[in-house]
Image (cartoon, rainbow, N blue to C red; front, side, top):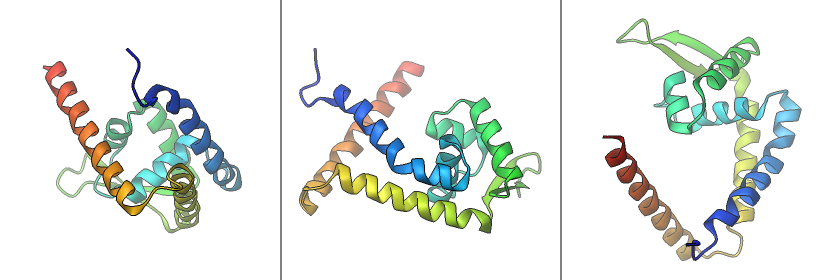
Length: 148
């Protein structure tokens, strides 16, 4: 059965467009795509500030996250701190040096979303957010049941 609205057909074009939008940032700041994704994730999700959370929430391999974080720390974009409750836990914080990369990355994300949602009214945007929220809940519920 094919999806009635081409969800499968949109995966590659969406990824290609996003890559095209963020490529100048990666080249300009000398970061990989995964490193940029991690910087933007930390900036946009400050409550998820451990390597394990990044890997889990973004569905990235722990080894890729670890390698990228080593590079980001060496470049001065990320600093590591011990957790307040558990000193063995390593918390991640963006440094001031990351501000410019994050600002440019966010600008590219806005450009991406403007391209993708061009021509949609505010009402369309509201409905679309609702649809995606519902779909995300359906997926999470199904995966939770399957994991048991």
